[in-house]
Amino acid sequence: MKASALKELFVDELKDLYSAENQLTKALPKMARAATSPDLKAGFEEHLKQTEGHVERLAKIFEQLQESPKGKKCKGMEGLITEGKEMIEEDPGSEELDAGLIAAAQRVEHYEIAGYGCVVAYAKLLGETEAVSLLRQTLDEEKATDKKLTQLSESINVEAANTNDSEEDDSQPKKSKAARA
Image (cartoon, rainbow, N blue to C red; front, side):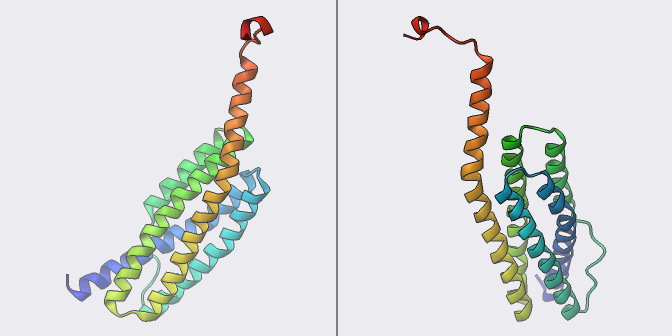
């Protein structure tokens, strides 16, 4: 691949990430409002601040490249956000909602990790050392967020499972002591 073609791909992928991050800055407040777990709510609010920083870093890279960040809508992120929105609209129980929000957020994180991994590799090949540094910083933050979501899921998913078990137990007719023996 010629360097000019790689640079075009690099800029195109950066535009995709810029769009994705901007869409996420609108979605994260909604996810925070929907979350019932205080830890999950705080995690979404913290990630919103990080995401705003990701947008700033991308803008700085575009400025260095003398390119515009505009002109592309990230359809992948749009789809992921739509799926999360639909899950919220289904209005499940609080524990199930939080478990679903974590799943939606982790899909977003994995999408971003893949995107940032690619642009870091392109930036290295193109000799864009400052872009590599900025993009790696964002990539590391995305990985850390995914790890935090996994840790939160360990307790929230258990709560959701226990809630479902309780609901199933309540719907089953109670057996007498003689029938259980």
